[in-house]
Image (cartoon, rainbow, N blue to C red):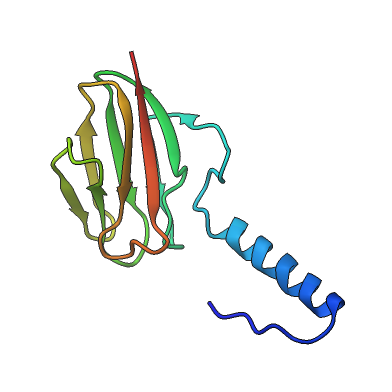
Length: 123
């Protein structure tokens, strides 16, 4: 995404507002500073995002990601301690069971620029 800065304070303010609105739209569910949603299901709708993008589950829970998009996506954990790159063709589901507490970040390795999420495991 590219923004062009034009002359004048009104134009600058409009560009900042547009950038802020677009950034909020691309967060993929829970925005920055939002509380995680208590659920064990994450949808991948036709929009290159995880919905919700931040979830919280109990230790021992199995989370299911469902690819409802028209493209292949994945769940690739970034935290080092979890070894996984779960690939989903359109219409497929993948699951992962969390056996320890912590906050685990993940992304789609095909679309890391806008598909990111976290799982917070309690207990």
